Image (cartoon, rainbow, N blue to C red; front, side, top):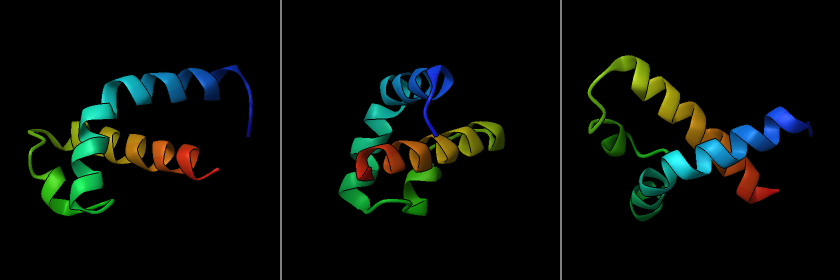
Length: 60
């Protein structure tokens, strides 16, 4: 899965979710405690998807 949109999303996710990624790295990836800081369900979904994609990027 390569292409411009993947690269763009990766960069966008990295920039936007870097702080959250660092927090969840301390807590353990996917820890629900990190999700509780997010006010809205929509934002929580976006962050969850972003973290999953960012996690896959770092694992490649």
